[in-house]
Each structure stands twice: as structure tokens, then as C-alpha cells.
Image (cartoon, rainbow, N blue to C red):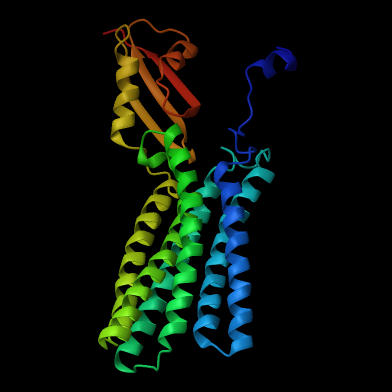
Amino acid sequence: MHNHSLRIWQHDHVFGQDQIKTGERKTMLVIAITVTMMAIEIGAGILYGSMALLADGLHMGSHAAALGITAFAYLYARKHAHDTTFIFGTGKVNALAGFSSAILLVFFALVMAWESIDRLFNPVVIIFNQAIAVAVIGLVVNAVSVFILGESKHEEGEHHHTHSHHDHNLRSAYLHVLADALTSVLAIIALSAAKFFGFIWMDPLMGIVGAILVSKWSWGLLRDTSRTLLDKEVSKEIQDHIKEAIEKKDDNKVADLHLWSIGPGIYSAAISVVTDNPKSPNYYKELLPEVGIVHTTLEVHRCDH
């Protein structure tokens, strides 16, 4: 067989990872907004001697760094999409970045909880008007960022039908800005209660509530990204859909099926079919439903009984 004939049966393993994702553009925009606000708050904090402004600026800086992981992952996946040493392409870089960002979210939540507990027992003097103003500005900026990334999540969702299809990298960025927005909302509630009703304890209490919620979000992201990184099989619902599509024709039976994620919304499948009347592998591939399978290995066995 000539090499030219062999190449007809070969294919690359890029699977669209060299394309710029919607989430990448939106993440870059959010990073620009976050870094700009961070610089303004840190500058104003130093200029006016405000610890509230300085602290919030540094807090936004920590989330800008986390968003940087998201941006780097998109860029790395695109740059190395044609690298053949990545067996199934660079799609899992997405999950790895999401996993790393989730760990950072856990760290931020622990710091938030520790600081809140400390302030519960050791209250500090709060300059309410300035602190509330900072929280309101932070909320506006974070609300804009949440809207931008939320639109991207909605666009991703329009193309996919199950939760497992989501872009984990985009989801991690969304959770970071959502955590910032939540912190601002809780801060406004707590500071207002402390200013008008004297409930000083509300400030650290809301910090603890925020830490618990952020921990819950990060746990969900850690669970989903680790499933992808450890090649945990895709939901039984999708597997049953594949089996049904193959077995409704002729007298086919699916003896073995492995389906795992190799990127956002794309899967690799290894399928073993047993039948009385074997046909070519391409015949069975054409029976597969549109669920995002981009790489298939098929075994066809004759059953004489």
C-alpha cells in the first residue's frame, strides 16, 4: 500500500482546539477591566491612605492572577493544538486550568474565613462611608464582569445539551468574578447593618457566609474537572443513547463501550459491537448519534450463535 493511500485513512487530533473560543475573548476583556480597577484602587489607597481601598485593590489583584491562568490555558491550548505528542489534542488543558483555579478559590475562601473569624473576636475600626463606596464600586465592576462571562456561558450552553459539556476554564473564570461580586454584596449588607443599626458583628459574619458559598462553588468545579482529568466515563444517559442508536439496527449488540471527555463538549469512544452480520466499522460509526464524539475506535465481532 502506498503512503498516499494510507494518508486517506489518517486524520489529525486537533478537534478545533486551534480556534479562538468565545470564552477566551470575554476572559481577556474581564482581565483588562479587573486590572484597571485594581490599579485605580491601589493607587487611590496609597494616595489617600485608605486601607479599605488598598485591601480591595489587592483582593482584585489576586482574582486577576487567577483569571490569568484561564487566559494562559486558552492560549496554550491553541498554540499546541497541532502538537502530535498530545494524543487526543489539548482539550484537557481546559480542565487542568479549571482545576487549578478551583484550588485558588478554595485558598481565597479559607483566607476569607480566617480573617472573618479573627475580626469576629478582634473588631477593627471601620470607616463606613468610604468602605461602602469601595464595595459599591467593586460590585458595579464585578457585575459587568459577571454579565460578560455569563453571556459566554449562555452561548456555550446553546451548543451543548448536558452539564458535562461546559467549558471548565470559562466556568472557573465566571466563578472567580461571581465570588468577587458576592463579596461586594455581602460587604454592602454587612456595612450598612453596622453603620445604621450598630451590628458590627455582621461584617465578619457575612465574610464567613461568603467563604462557605465560595467553598461550595469551588468543590463543584474541583469535582467536575477531576472527573475529566481522571478520564471518568461520561454520563450513563449519553452512553445509553449511543447503545440504543447502534442496537436498533440489525441484530447488533454493544458488548463494550468506553466514552470519555478529551475537551469541552468533545469525546473519544472505544466501542465493541457483536453481530450476526458484521459490516464495516464505518457503517457503525454512521449510526452514532450527534453527542460530540470526535474520535472513535470500533471493534466488530461475528456472533455465530
